[in-house]
Amino acid sequence: METAAELPLADPMAPTPLMVLQRRDETHDTFTLSLEPTEPFAFKPGQFNMLYPFGIGESAISISGDPAAPRRLVHTVRQVGNVTEALARLRPGDLVGVRGPFGQPWPLDQARGGDLLFVAGGIGLVPLRPAILWAIAHRESYGRVIVLVGARTPGDIVFVDEVQEWRSHFDLEVEVTVDSAESSWRGSVGVVTQLLPAVEFDRADVTAMVCGPEIMMRFTAGDLIKRGVPPSSIHVSVERNMKCGIGLCGHCQFGPYFVCRNGPVFRYDLVERLLTVKEV
Amino acid sequence: MPSLEDALASHPFARGFSPAQLRTLTTCLDGETTWVPDAFLVSADGVADHCYLLVEGAAVISADSPGRGRRSIQTIHAGDLLGWSWLFPPHRWAFDAVALTPTRAIVLDAAKLRGAIDDDPAFGLEVVRRVGATVADRLNATRLQLLDLYGNRG
Image 1 (cartoon, chains in turn blue, brown):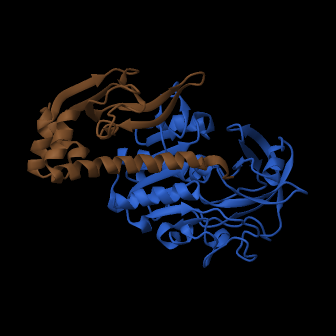
Image 2 (cartoon, helix red, strand yellow):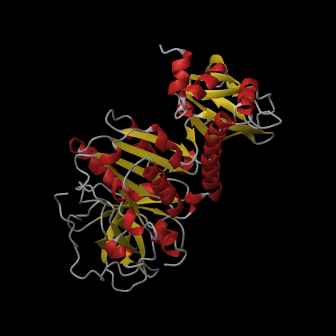
Image 3 (cartoon, chains in turn orange, purple):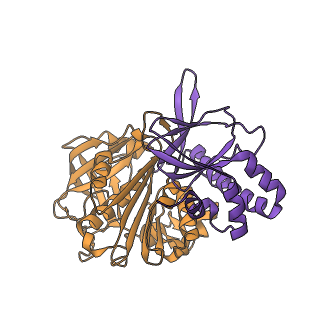
C-alpha cells in the first residue's frame, strides 16, 4: 500500500480523546462507532487501536473503516465485557480515548497480481472489512476476489447491507453461510469451510486472509492446504490480551511473538504450531 | 448435453475409480431426476432405495420438530453425495432434504450398488472410502457448528 501507517500520536501510550460522531447497531450484540479524528488518521487494513472509555479501561479493537476515508475512524465492537459494554453506552458527542494504530496489516501489497480469498467467521469480518474495501477500490490490482462469510444465524451477519451490496458486484464472488437457520432462510447452512469447494481460485497464486475464532481459522487453513494452497500464502489474524500495543508489556506474548507488534496478522506457517498449543 | 454415463464419470464421487470400477458403477445407474425449489428430495424415515449424486442446484438437509418448526442443518451442493442411509441398514433416510433451487441428481439403484459392493470388495472399498470421506467432512462441519464458535470475538 502506498500510504504508510504512521502513529498519529507523539506518545503511543497517551490516549487522544476523540468525539463519537455516530453509533450504529450491527446485530443484537455488535455495534459500530464512528469517531472524528482531529487530523487524518492513516491506518493499514488489519490494524487495531486501543480504545479507552474513560475511567473503565482499555480494549484492543480492530479498525473496521475504509482506509481511503481517514477523516472518519470506525470501529466495530462486540459487547463481551466491562470495557466493550462501556463503549456500547457511548453516544454521539461523547469522548473516547484512542491509541494507535498498532500491529501488522493484511499483506495486500504482496498479494498484488494474484487472487484474493477472504474468509470471515462471525465478527472476524470486522478486521477484514478494510482489506475488502481496499481490494474493491484497487480491483485492477488483483485477479479473482472472493469473500466467504460465516455467521451464527442470519441475524448475526455484521455489515449485512454492505455484504449484500458486495454481492451485486460482477467482479466479486461473495458467499454467505450460517450455522443455524429457520427454514425461511434460503441461503446456505453450514460452517464457512463448506463454502470452499464451490469457489475457484489459482492455488499457486492466491493470498488467503482468514479471520474468526481460532478453531475456524485452523480448519479453514487445513482445508486450503488440502486444496494445494501453500501455508505461507495463508494469513490469519490472532487475538490475544493486548495491553500496551507496542510490544513492551508482554501480555500478548505468543510463543516468540508479541501479537500487538508482530501481529495480529501472521503468516499461517509461522504460527500453525502455536495455534494448537493450549498455553503459549 | 453429456450422456448420463459421462455425467457420472465426471462427478466428484466417481473421480479416481478404475475404468472397470466405473463400469461397475455405471451398471447401477437408474437415470436422473430433478426437483423444483421446496420439493423434498428425500423424507425422514423414507426407504433409502436410491443413492443421489447432485449435479446441479442446492438442497438443505433439515428436520421438522413439532412445535419448533423446520430447522435447516446443512446445505449440500452440486458435486455432493446426498446422504449415506442407502448404504447402512435399516436403509431409511434419517433426515429430510429439501431443494433450495432447481436441483438435478444422478440416481443409482441402492440395492444394485450394495450388491456390487458385496461382489467386488475392491470396488466396495472405493465406494466406502468416498462415503466415509463425506461422513467425515459432515461430522467435522457438524462439530464446528456444535461448538457455536462465533460467540466471543470482539
